[in-house]
Image (cartoon, rainbow over all chains, first blue to last red; front, side, top):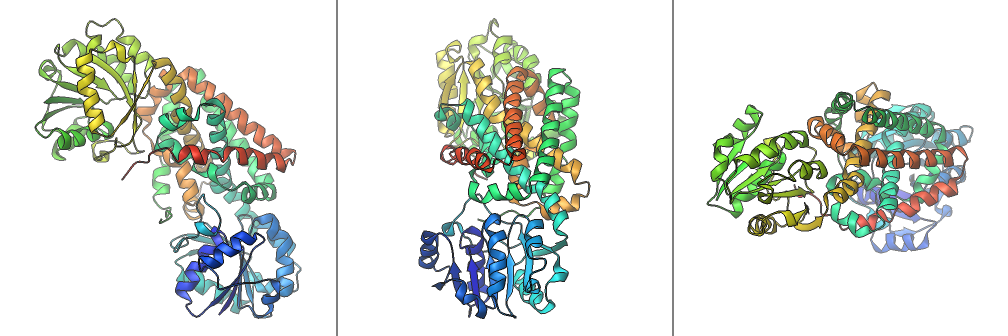
Amino acid sequence: MKVVIIGVGLIGGSFAKDLKKLRPGSQIYGIDANSTHLETALSLGLIDEKSDYSDLPNADMVIIAIPVDALVTELPKILDGVGEETVVFDAGSTKSLICKVVENHPKRRNFLACHPIAGTEYSGPEAAIENLYDGKTNIICEVEKTAFKLQETALKLFQDMGMRIRYMNSDAHDKHIAYVSHLSHISSFMLGKTVIEKEKNERDIFDMAGSGFESTVRLAKSSPAMWTPIFEQNKENVVETLDEYIQNLEEFKQLLLEDDFDGIYNEMNSTNKIKQILNGIPLTKK
Amino acid sequence: MKVVIIGVGLIGGSFAKDLKKLRPGSQIYGIDANSTHLETALSLGLIDEKSDYSDLPNADMVIIAIPVDALVTELPKILDGVGEETVVFDAGSTKSLICKVVENHPKRRNFLACHPIAGTEYSGPEAAIENLYDGKTNIICEVEKTAFKLQETALKLFQDMGMRIRYMNSDAHDKHIAYVSHLSHISSFMLGKTVIEKEKNERDIFDMAGSGFESTVRLAKSSPAMWTPIFEQNKENVVETLDEYIQNLEEFKQLLLEDDFDGIYNEMNSTNKIKQILNGIPLTKK
């Protein structure tokens, strides 16, 4: 199988690692706007050859793992270039705009809109890990618009990689993912900011912060280049989640100011049920 | 050495495990308001005997690991009961009020005010783990008020357990810890609440949430019985951190509403330096 991976960072590189294992005869071609990343991917053996869009017509599979702003401009060009039998899928954290820009593309049937819910706070080809996707959910949008045979090729790979598949329309995806992923990132970035602003002496943070703080600000290590366009494309939903989050924080503060500590207890107690919910979330194996 | 541990949950139980290892001849006596916890601690071998305050006069060491509201009422009684040569230390997440309630106690010199920055989101004796404190920071307040010989006994144990010691006054402790610990818990609880409220269908959270969400809401599993009195005792500092956090979230939202995505990028980029800070935080070994 001839596979072209566009964007050879954490996400694309981790696909490459699984492909090497699960489809041992495959030739993997890499494309990346960052030439250093491309060289690294080659030297790490994630890809077999550096490539460009001229390799698209003969590809069996094209995996696009680039920031969602680049995805919106590149996806139509990529579809222009691929062959009739090429399956193209993405890994973008937003789905509505991406589905919209190709809705009338003559090769719409070659594209499968995907969001594998997997990753770490690190980025670049060095961050790629084997089995990143094992046990994770892959959300597929507008599956009915993809040619059945091409769906099958992609789904068989996802299945072999250990992913669970969930089908959803792209607007519902963007709305739900704002809560369970995009808001988490903002809460973490702003928590990091609040503490850094206050604790000018970084040594104090280092000394006093425990694993709880580390856990809540972990996502503040994430790549701004990746996340800025996600927030831009999902602005409406993200603002809604932020409004609700700020409102909940304000209410908690109000309970404190009113010395309503029974209320504080109840707030925390009713949120404790997150335990049971989280028990179902597969963690990244590292 | 005769040790009395008051509160045999995660914190007290983990002290017990290290004591068994590092002070093999010790007899460990357990006291707990929760009789089920006490039985569990005994059956797990964390303690050698169930006990009560009548054992205090002959104790060499008393470790108090109970919620900070109980600590404020119990600490004076405990000091009343101990012998001249008993060292008593606590593990409370607040320090100002605790130091204040015993400032004029005739046995103030027997007490060392401690806050080992260690823990997990779990609680109870089953949650106790060996080496929980290894590599962690122990903040000691008003050390000059503790008898030198008694300081020495406690510090030698902390050192053998692998803890780093930092000295701080109790007001400074409460102010800094509000940022690096107490605020993290509120941000996590309110994030959990926001998502649970929206996603009535818990199956959807389960399916769409990844390890990033898991990480940011981990602290929302924490015990309300432990955290309510912490927020009560540190109310003033906590409200201040909440104000600043909410303000930062509002500013981020405003940048989104104004389509200032360069601003959004810069916010995240400048917070990325949390990476370097976090590299210094020792994580819980489990």
